[in-house]
Length: 132
Image (cartoon, rainbow, N blue to C red; front, side, top):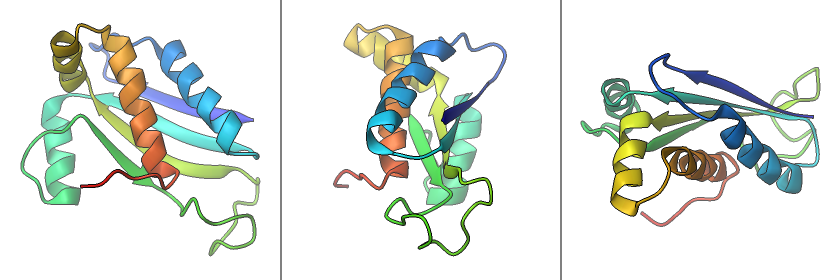
């Protein structure tokens, strides 16, 4: 079973089903065990704080990922396996204002951009990184 935990600040309208379905589809293909990921939709002020704290960059960004485990590990290889056999991948944080700006620039729906950013964050949790 794949579990997508979702949190959004109340004033940000997000199509949770669209984002959950996108994440679930990718995980169903790539992870062949029970898995869990959390997604939070936040504002630029909080995103800037996170970026400053964890990346030492005093600016906002569109998405951040915080892995809980190394995706290269298989069962029995990590330091401690969860007793409930759920692979907890980590957290994906998306900036709603950044998604709105990107949607306007690219003439896309905000929910499509949020889903794209969440999938980008998921790739990072799965160990797939882009060149910096």
